Length: 282
Image (cartoon, rainbow, N blue to C red; front, side):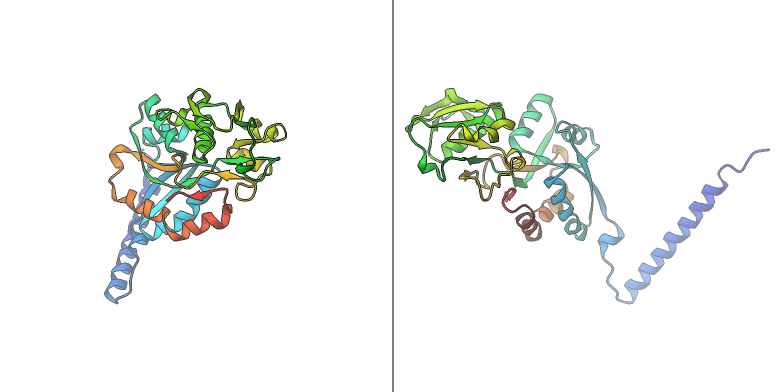
């Protein structure tokens, strides 16, 4: 004799079907009576967005209720490995991600062939110049030593910051991976040394100044807002971005997501939460 294996699921489906029908009738009744029913509560579009744990994920939590009002249900997935969010996005496991700056995305697209594009700037973690010996860049003397990160991405970033502040001049075609050999102007004869990025805060007793990434500065108890004697502006090319698959860039949900992120509420959250260590880049 055959067992009624599907009896319980069918009953459950019947109950759920009746519940949905009752819900529809209720919504129809409310509409008939002139009671406004928010569309987002009836049919929200689920968007899976990846972010690294910390500020990126925290900011997305502030974006979430604003996006919900526009009909988007943001599901925020946190990652600790920087290589995973782009792979997950390219594979379709995510709809968007928010964790990387534009040069990093460009390198990933070039090296791994991802068909990903940025659709909006988000925030910047400003690279800063720090010192235990001077209070401003004007106090630098001829022959002083400045330390910069020794990896290509952040080393070039440090040199570009020194150029932006008028301390050195780089070859016009040096780009974002500039190195010491690209320095063509150095009126103060500054000595540029390259050190591991994580060790730069410890070098401050030995050098006149150092360019230090925000995360390493904060780990060393330095405040980008109060302790940096110079730092990147919000229009830096190292601004972080929201990335999506190229085929999705013109989807309506992308515009809604960007509008929610670029809201005044989120800008205020960033300013109050991070107090200068993270800057809105739009």
